[in-house]
Image (cartoon, rainbow, N blue to C red; front, side, top):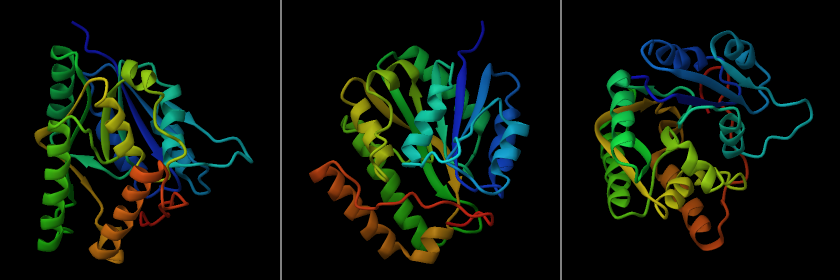
Length: 249
């Protein structure tokens, strides 16, 4: 029996340092009927060239077309997708037990039609994570798990797997949101079905921005954006910050 087709969608902006490391594990899933899509936001480094050499499809922003948000990039990638499931993944993220995670997502989505969105636990790369980080990430993960259980829907943009039919039904990501677009997507999905945070699976990402800015600043910025989103339907932040050639924001 053929596996359902998954479209991996990776939004990028000047991420030449990490894009290959993001795509290569996905290409290793030789058993899976899949496609890898990279949606560029107007990179000025070698990101697009590397993407073209590794991905199946690449959205290249026309010259002069302004990038609105990472949400827009994700939607551009989704527009190219032919998969039954859209697997959105931030550039630089690595999924532990990737093979098992993808199989679990497929089995859960197929067995339970009401499951429309799935995510997993987030952690920093081994060696980067401090005790303070572990406390904050534990709270974040528990919040995500809890909100999904009570049908309020929540996920970080690191990894979000969505049924394409449901994604199209709710109109995809809200491109006017600079941040909170990931939370918003799962919140709207939870109104028409179920969103789930799968246990025993972890996505690893960089701690650089969190360590440079500090958790206090990160949390205050997140709170400001969340309150603005809840009360006004808008982001507090105005710009999607790119990742430079060194892989740092």
